[in-house]
Image (cartoon, rainbow, N blue to C red):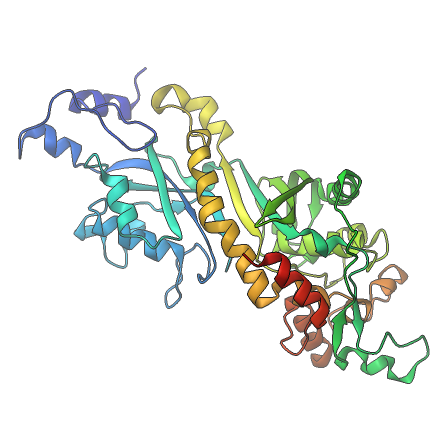
Length: 433
């Protein structure tokens, strides 16, 4: 039995559509001919794109905020892929717009997928779209899909990558109160969260080797499988079905270099994620890796029913690496071809090297993002040692004062906190061109 869409394509004599968005009609249609009118009809497509999320309030359109979708929609309209009739405020609904993943504020993506009804014409459409986009957003191409395709609902799996400078994992680099940590019983302990904190100096001989990667992987693997992640998101009831998520794989992939500096790469593959989940998982994993949180704290926060605040890593270094459509490809790959990231892999790697990685390294160098965050990850802020006692007073949501302290600890960006000049000078020297 031939599907309605196949019959439509056959009746209109549609040319072959390729994964890069190009078309190859057998004969150039005459201006205003029936063939040209058919070419200019809206078709359901999957649009592939890469972007650097810094400076944007996320992927999803949010009136009054600068988002990736707003810039992309405008570029598609200017390029003729979206008609004037569909360019108003209700245009997203009219063209059945859907994204495979809703990346949060500041989070980048290397292979985001958007499904929509658009006009796949003319041949140089992709070049036209990119000419109307800022250089931090790059459309890779598009592919025809079945009419009922929805990028969000059809996406089976999403892979994210998270990178950190290797020095973050150096056990010598710890957050301490200036002048040293107060001893047990010290009267100043209650006010220690107000004391200025600094990072201890880095061990110049530290190397993040295979043993370090294996240790980090063993910690990250505790997230694999189905768990209740209500403590790894924001304000979610532990009884909410939305808290249950399934992680397929979580591992540390070793190091690579950006401007001569070693960075550590971690990848997580899951069906779907909730707000800040990956940032909190990685923040908690690093705290346990460095011994700031006792062994078993990560797993306890997964199993505990009470609300516990865990460290949330900065958005710098987190990006969507791939969207996977396995079930769709199993059923429809013979119609329009499989939806696959592979055809764009070389182009995406160039975008990473030219736009993403230099941007991340520059921000970390200029804004001390990771150093500032690490200063906020310490026992006084999260009271890790009290969790298993059943009385995690420092981690449970309590008074307004405690909530304020916890909110500050999660952000980890206290402008009053600065790493010691020796550490910042060392890092600046290694990051300099």
